[in-house]
Image: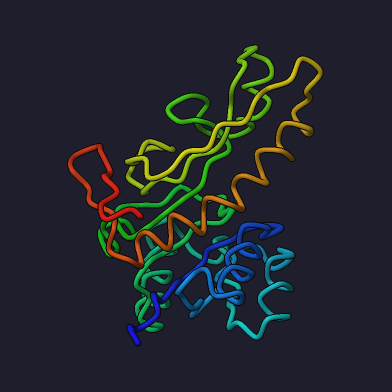
Length: 206
């Protein structure tokens, strides 16, 4: 049996995407194991999720570090000490510095609640509703030095209804996030992702 992909998951809040990843691992559809969950927020509910499932976790408050680079250096140390293969951002509300990006090149994934490159940054669902688009959705991408600008792995479209609010659209998009994030991680685990510049090709996709 092949070794399981070792994940390090970074969170700041509720951790519903963390829960989706845990659920897919436990039912066998995601061939991975979570080695460590790290939160910069000691009150993040995602920590309760990790504890419930017996997953090791650490609280690392960014306010305890003099700059972003020092914080990311400690993240790298923890992730490396846990032999992490792939870093998963699951509602991690921090912009990464080159310190972390260079330590895990093309090995950091994020999910964003919009069809990138549309509506990057915060409050993407509100941006979509206010703009009047008919289709929104979510995007799994590799992380680079920009804000939600990395190479796109998977996207899923969600219709925007005439009476949608930020909250109702966000709820429907979240269901798709929970579906496609584990899929993207499994593609990485299978060695099926090939990056060519900005383009991520899915090879041997059955």
